[in-house]
Image 1 (cartoon, rainbow, N blue to C red):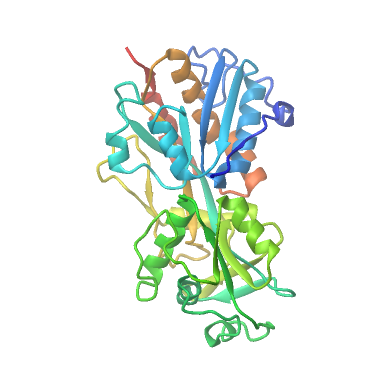
Image 2 (image 1 turned 135 degrees about the vertical axis):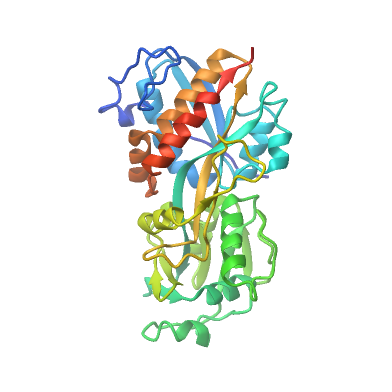
Length: 366
């Protein structure tokens, strides 16, 4: 059974500087994205576990500024989030992989005759994390990483690893932890491997991890992968960098340098990436991440996580709540508290302007 975790709504955490925010805007959203004081009602969302720390901060901040509102975000996985939006269980979904064009086409009923769309809200590195006593950092080429996660490299003292880490004491078998659920993190990670090491990683890009071996262990959710790595020895896995704690991390070769999983590196990759406009409305903002970037300081093993919402809701109350919440999430204040809570990279001013323009299409069914 899939585990889900409702986020505790810690209203008092972020009261400083937020409680006094207000607006005369009848939609409940000020021009800078800060929520107004006239909102009320309940907003249900859920999905990506990568967003969990950021969602805690966003929910607390939004409720502090809007004391008559309640927001619930159920932490599960990206697939469950999108499913919840499309079946009407959620008013918004957190997802590390954008809605497919088929999912958008199927969203008409859930979206009161309209359609769902995506806006980027969270940019974060995916860390390749490990636990080896006495080792905090390892350098690896993309091909070495692909061989480990495909099962072609099974020992830490393999020449491909030791050649880039001559001073590290490495020995013993490698135990790989992977996401067993429908995970946007997995989709982003496997997309990276398929782009940078296609001769090694011959599997299709998928939200389900495609390799099963005796030394591989599936774990549910980000927390499950991190717990699996932490509980073992000689373990390795992939997870949102905000969640890995004190585990060791891999610096991956990008161009001529080895780069670790930092917010700045993730942001540099997004800056070097294009928009995906195929079959999408102008307000559906999705990135085609440049996994093979060689930009200075870029770290291409990243996820751009989205909020998937409807352009039309059944009631004016729900439309106003979603519009205000998304506006707050992408505001400077919302992005700053996510960066503090989760170590994510704030979206750029240009992207913020695009998202705020996009949410203006949200309305109630006539």
